[in-house]
Length: 150
Image (tube, rainbow, N blue to C red; front, side):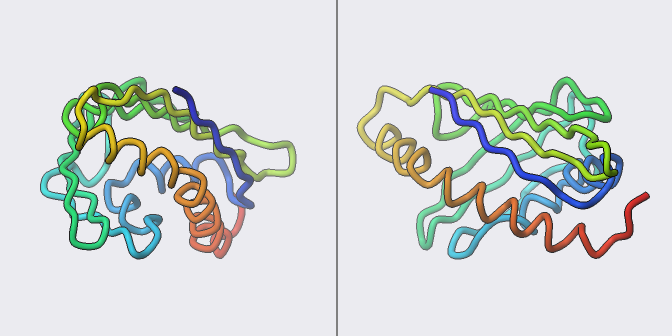
């Protein structure tokens, strides 16, 4: 399956990329009532880096481990190496716009686990992606548009 979402931010590509490359940005743009607990991650993500975290859906913890790949000024990939899906590849792209803003594009390819519990968890997560990414777009704009364009 594939999911794609994009939004515009009135901030430069370098500001947007730097924000998304910080491991603490994950928690900053996660909507309530979901929360993230990072167990192990470098402060700044780079190729080969790993993030180990738990996504809490109310009282239900989902442990997740991601490998960071294909890092450049225009984006990066996080690939699930442990978690609720049999495969999850999330490409974060940051495209400069002529007016100095940035288009943020999230492209996710995923496959559900063939397991009753994890299949249901994956389906619930899939159905929540539009809400999750709408919130992430709103929150990213709110956090970054206070920074002057560079």
